[in-house]
Length: 309
Image 1 (cartoon, rainbow, N blue to C red):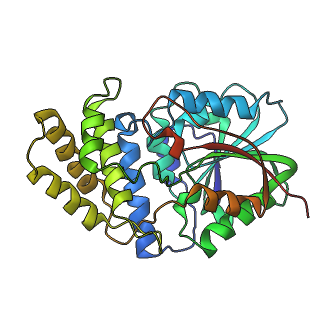
Image 2 (cartoon, rainbow, N blue to C red):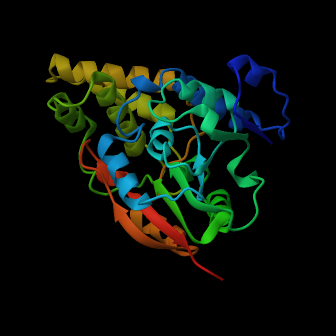
Image 3 (spheres, one colour):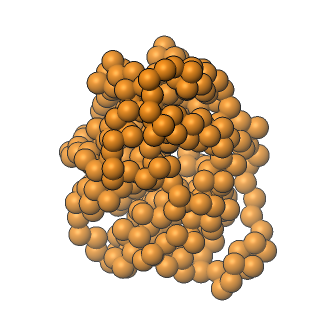
């Protein structure tokens, strides 16, 4: 892992030499998926990207940021980087892929790359001492780690990086029983009537609903193959309007274009499971969710303070 700050040109960045530990084939596939997403980050909709209301909640939880604060942003999420811009704090952006940071930076509207420190590193191997950061920001970061020891280790390491009165502020993903009784057909019909969503947003939301409905609750694994079969079966059913069939076809394309492979991605926990996982090491001081996209209650934003040992 190496630091990179204030590139004079993008070519300087590509010429910069850095070393990282080798990653597994599965991890590299995940990196490739995100690098592809950040090529067209502006095409991704609410739920994949923080929405306008999500960012308002982040801003509320962060509060005033003084000049001498140190802020870590896990991942190259442009909305979080823009949110911190102008605070004159020390801002570190950490991701396992410099390519993702570069590609995402194209969509910044307020943040300046020369004001950021970039680190190429796995989030569990960051080169900072205990209590270094005042604020750590992330968007759905816990879900990047498999259930069990990996997500537990991640949360433990992040808690140590936080200052004694520091904050971990992140959007999380949970599964909700409120979704389960609704059929995919009902979901497609509902989305077709939701005028404020863009076409790709509707497709991604239905695709994610299919993943939830076909996931294995015991192992918390998504099954991409079963999700596609469920959507294909839906297309064979009678009584759907053209708009609804169009959303189902879009959801199928979204899954196929995502690069996900069966058995590779894990499903989020139930809310009570997530709260239990967090409260082992953190005190949850604030919890709120947006209301400007369907099922936003499955993406709560929490402000967590590490417990002192």
